[in-house]
Image (cartoon, rainbow, N blue to C red; front, side, top):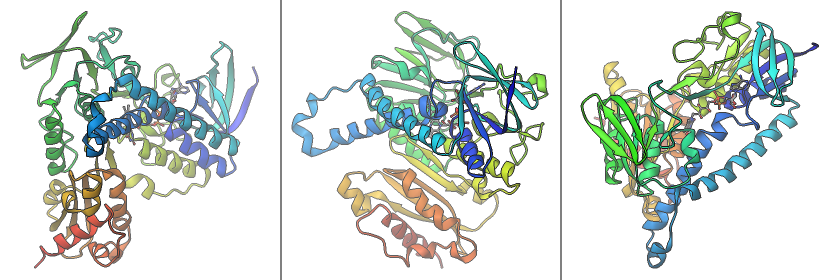
Length: 465
Ligand SMILES: Cc1cc2nc3c(=O)[nH]c(=O)nc-3n(C[C@H](O)[C@H](O)[C@H](O)COP(=O)(O)OP(=O)(O)OC[C@H]3O[C@@H](n4cnc5c(N)ncnc54)[C@H](O)[C@@H]3O)c2cc1C
């Protein structure tokens, strides 16, 4: 069999693979990208970020409509079911796929559809959908095969009432009740979506508080608002077994508690997609989570084979995966990379209300004995929030008492994931250009949510003595 030769072969068309492929193509390399699914975009576009965010947008629109006094008279005429929301998401997925195809075409990256498998450290076989296969050779490889929901062996995921974050996207009705096991980002986002559809939700958390990597005040607010929406949060629980029946699913916990609901959404952990890739045969052994260990340049134990995105472990975000891909593209093509791409990344969590943060939390700063002060603005006092009716939320800046540099930005409420980037831009400035004073010495459009920065900065500076 003739093996076609490329400079680099990228496996996977999610954000990690796309970031690497585009960077390499622009650097003049001959690049091929292999994709096992029938279209490009990765899990990000088809099963993860995009569908869940499109669902969440529809839910937010519905909640705004229900709350708006303008529609008071016709509110009861609106019936929205989960499949209606899924149909809205489909349109976005198709748009995304079209956009991403264009990127590959415009940059002359050769797309090959099929399952990639290593035959040797410099050679792969691509098993095409029709059964034919092809061999491809390259000097470098980027594995960007993503992750899939983790399935404990004792749970029957073939049962129609037992769902994961992929299969929930095929749900053909609105369940009356749902238990979500796992209160990480995905669990909390689906708890928001479902409770806004008036589904009774049990959110079962294996830890003592929600999303403990976030600022405590923000997670307290999230717990409060989820509970207000009817979500019952069960902290510190561990499952003992799942009993899927014809009339519902019972989740048994080690504490002796049991929850029976129409469906169970298992949102507890993901595993790297490394199976059936011939990796062990070439000396790359995935860890217990199916991920590939990499060094700080995202090289695996074989330096010409890189791994980026979910398959390389945390933070497992589309945003970070894309930047890791670009970083690796530069490492391969130029030997020089922009470290800032992979060092400090923000978190956006699309619950209702939305959450976003970048930089240090109060807990971290206190532990490091850094003298910081808090600058805070409540959305209820911001004119734009009052106009749009989105008064739930706040912006909190943490800044150094002496140098005034911004150390952390934490936000929840409408547009939090956008708002955080204003502060991020200042926080990333070198030296004295990173100062909270920027926000008191700049004129903001009025009324805007950005004004929250000015209000917060004045609040924080007033605390100094
Ligand atoms: C429900 C949900 C919501 C999320 N929300 C967000 C969010 O709001 N923001 C955010 O930043 N991140 C979010 N994420 C995470 C984000 O989707 C992932 O971090 C991101 O998709 C990882 O990108 P990737 O390039 O590593 O892999 P993926 O996007 O998973 O793409 C991997 C691709 O590789 C292909 N592939 C796998 N094996 C092979 C093989 N052997 N041969 C050829 N092709 C193969 C797959 O078919 C797939 O297309 C969410 C995830 C989920 C599940």
